Length: 220
Ligand SMILES: [Zn+2]
Ligand SMILES: [Zn+2]
Image (cartoon, protein in one colour):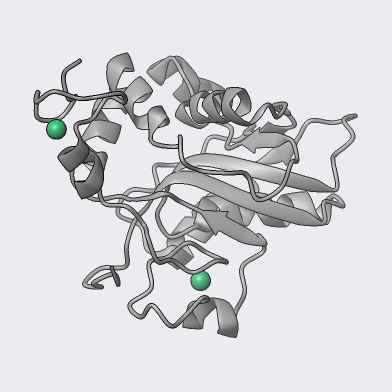
């Protein structure tokens, strides 16, 4: 078997030992928002102490750095092999709670354009890996504009009211919420607020990768 990244011999997974070790693992992160921490003494970041997010925990095994970001872009452009490769990087992750998996929904027009929802794809991977059911309760009835290039406040405004819960469905008290990449966290924040306004008590976020704050050097 060849390593997916460098074509050296890979033993069991899709990567050789060196490439696997060199992936940008999010090794020391805030337990609440998964942002990488600069000091290994901290467990929670200053922002979560001052203003905790609506979700209760966030788990992102990787940082959104090379080679993860170009692979994610290739996957979103339709490269399924990239999608399989990326979803395999969840392999060492364990669920925080054995609750149903929800995923970030896409508006019909965006779904038609891309042909698939990457958050649903990752939720399916985790559903198989953890033997947890997927719950299709979240919908995106209003198309929001691309989040690219917007700051946190603009992202919040852009997302407000774009998500909803399917009418007539009963929500679990605890949920896992799956997305592909957590950038500012505005999307999972908006969905967590919505879920909690509808009686959900705990929301645990799982994303494949977390964008590190600009200029920060994570602790190894
Ligand atoms: Zn390799
Ligand atoms: Zn935090």
